[in-house]
Amino acid sequence: MRRLLLVLAFTFVVSCSQQTSPSFDEQAAIDTLRILSADDMQGRQTGTDGNAKARAYLLERIAALDVDEVGQTHEHMFKFMREVEEEPAVEVTGTNLLFRINGTADTGKTIVVSAHYDHVGVNDGKVFNGADDNASGVAGVLAIAESFKNNPPKNDIIFALFDAEEMGLQGARAFVRNLELIDPNISFNVNFDMLSRSDKNELYVAGVFHRPYLKPVIEGIAAKVPTKLLMGHDDPELGINDWTQASDQGPFHNADIPFLYFGVEDHPHYHQPSDEFESVPVEFFIRSLKTVVTAVHAVDEQLTGFSL
Image (cartoon, rainbow, N blue to C red; front, side, top):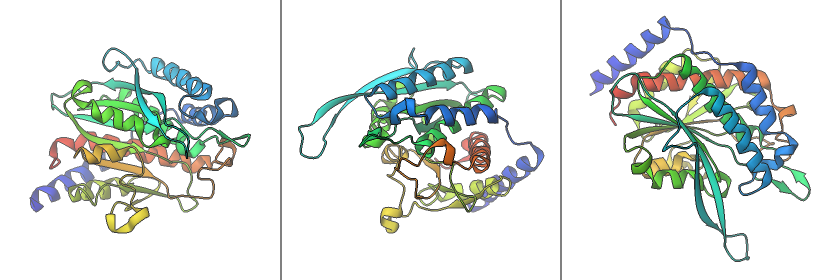
């Protein structure tokens, strides 16, 4: 097994040295970040008019990509009970947005590339715009979809924009509960949450602790991307600094589906009204997107060699 992993790692590094990084429309990604985090989206809280407006915008973007529906629709509704402090629980309806690009090879495997589009809404008259959390991740998913439209994947890929992450990963939980109906071949998840802020030019990837065979793949990616890509935040001994259950990769992990989660560390703008487009370091944001686009193409290329 050790020899096999070394061969896979060598093959990956060689292939990276021979290929250019997949491309995407950088201005479109910046526009996505700006539009989703504008005041008129009202913080995109699940069940609000602002969330519905964000969803309508994203459906336009999905239509422009000319991609396939999942189960004959892009909109997948789900319901859950939400408890707010000492008030009675109320039923909330969320909507996941799903689309797919079919692979060119008959691998029998499907990758889910995901990010949540909801945020925490308006509090005390202040709009929590959620530029980094998680308009940035949504921009990443759309950039990756665009890159695969230009360079089709080997494996089938479902792109998931989850709702109600901020209410307990509800969109991802609903998706995982229905895996057999959505696609029984789902074999891997790559999730993004907060891709646009790092004074240190650092982007973390979690998941390698749980699947050590992914380490040489990440090392190969790190050698060519424009950010400092660090592995970590996935060891249970880290307590609150273990991100395994911190975002939508959690339900996949609980279902024994391998994941890679990309994100920055917490910063002063996290869950604050200051998390807005105007304060985002756009140059890092674009470098971060280039990193995750390259990473997902690498996962697609190497997936059949993983010890799933």
